[in-house]
Image 1 (cartoon, rainbow, N blue to C red):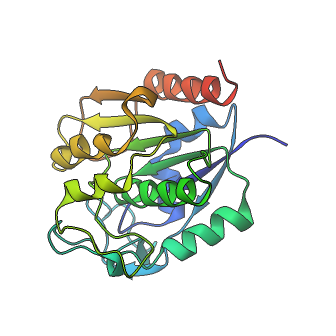
Image 2: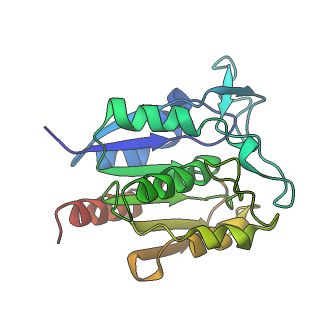
Length: 220
C-alpha cells in the first residue's frame, strides 16, 4: 500500500476545485503518494479568486466560520468532528497538504490528534500553502482562552515536521507569517516565494516540495 496524503482545500472551494488548483503539486506528489481530497461540510460563498473560473462547481464549502481573532472561539470550528472522522475512517494518512483556511483547520486537527496521543505525531509531515492564522478554540467547551491569537500558543506547538509556503504578494501574508509560530521551530521549513494567494505553479518548486515530503516519510 502506498503512503497517503490528506488534501485539505481552502475556504469557499471544494475538493474538486482544489484538485485543479493543486494540479502541479498533485502531479509531483503522486510520484510518491496517493492523494485523498476531502470537502468541508459548511456551505458558503465562493472564495477569493474562485469566480468566474469555477462557476458552476458550487456548492462552495468552508471548514469554519472565520472571524477576527478577538471574536473567534470553539464555536467557529464545527467541522473538527468531521475532520476527525475522515482521519480515522479514511486513513491512515502519512501526511497532510492544506491551503489557506484549510491550513488553519489542519493545524487544529493535528494538534488535537497529538494531544490525544500524548504528544505522539499523527502524521509524518504537513505542508501548508498561504496559511491563515489560527483561532483560539479547542475541543473543550470549558476551556475558553484569551481572545487573542497568541493565546492559542499556550495550547502547544504542533510537533509534526512541517513545510510552509508563504507568498510575498498574498494579501493574507501577515497571517501566514503568524501561522508558522504554531509549529515546532526545530521541525519546520519555511519557503518565501513570489506570487499571490494560490497554490505554487512552478514545476521545479513543486517537485522540490514533493521530494522533501518523500524524504521525511522515508526518514532520510
